[in-house]
Length: 206
Image (cartoon, rainbow, N blue to C red; front, side, top):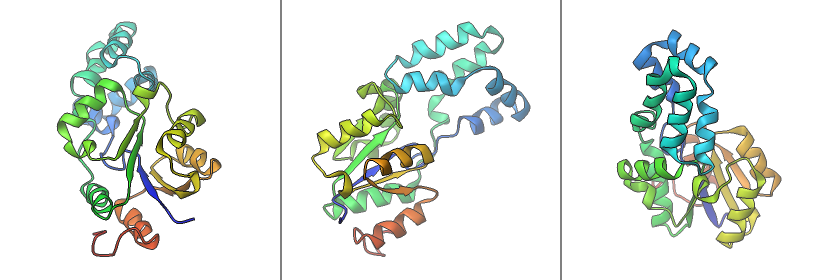
C-alpha cells in the first residue's frame, strides 16, 4: 500500500539523545560506568516518559542514591545538554515532506516537562501535523497500546503509515501491527527510503 503519512521518532532520529556521552564529559567514563551500573537512570527516565513529573522522579532517585546525588540531579538541571544537537538532515526531511503535502506525525517516548523544554530549544518540534508524546498518553513504546492509540486517532490505515525509529523493539512492534517501518541509523538512509517510496525527490531529500 502506498504511504499516506510518515511518523518520526524524535530521540536519535531528529535530536541526538546520549546521556552517557554527557556524563563521560562531566565525570569521566570510569565514574559514568559506575554510576550507570549502580543507578538505573534509564529506568528513572522511563517513568518520566510514562507521565510522571520530571523533577520529582529525578529528585526521588537522587534521594535514594545519596552517593550519587549531585550527578543524578544533572539529569534534570542540564537535560538539554544530553538531548543535542539536532540532526539537521532529518529536520530537512521533515520539512520537505510537509512542503510536499505529506502528513507528518511524531511518536516519541518523552516526558511532559522534558518535551516542553525540548520545544523551547528546537522549534521544529512544533511543526508536526500530529504529535503522540508518551508522557501525555500515559504509555510508552513498545507497548502495543500506544500504537493502537495512534491508529485510532490519526485516521490512516496501519499499512499506509511509514514509521522511522532507531530502536529494534519499537520497530518490531510497529511491524507486528502492519505498519511500514524504517530502522533509523542515519538520515541519508532514511532520505533514500523516502525517495524510494515516492514521497520526496532526490533534490528535496538532500
